[in-house]
Length: 89
Image 1 (cartoon, rainbow, N blue to C red):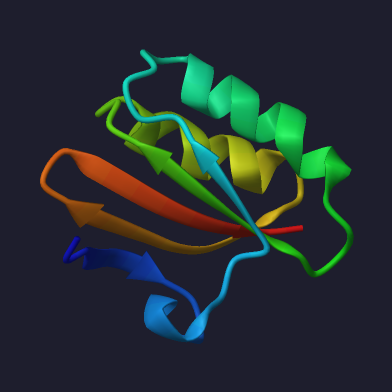
Image 2: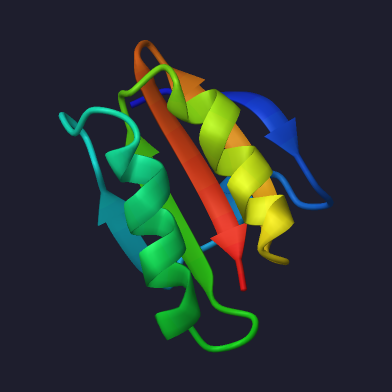
């Protein structure tokens, strides 16, 4: 896949190696956001979760939910209908 960076923090997403991947492709909203919020507490501080979603509405949910729960959204990328989020605990 060739992702286009929509949003990033300090590092380019290609420089970040996620510790875990949550593949939510094919799952309708709001499940990608719910699963992300259920998974994040299981990570250790500093670990990175990669979330893959093809739910267009997730672009409105996941970044807001991540911020509201005190996590860091490192990047958002898009390749066609697939969105890739890198989130750090």
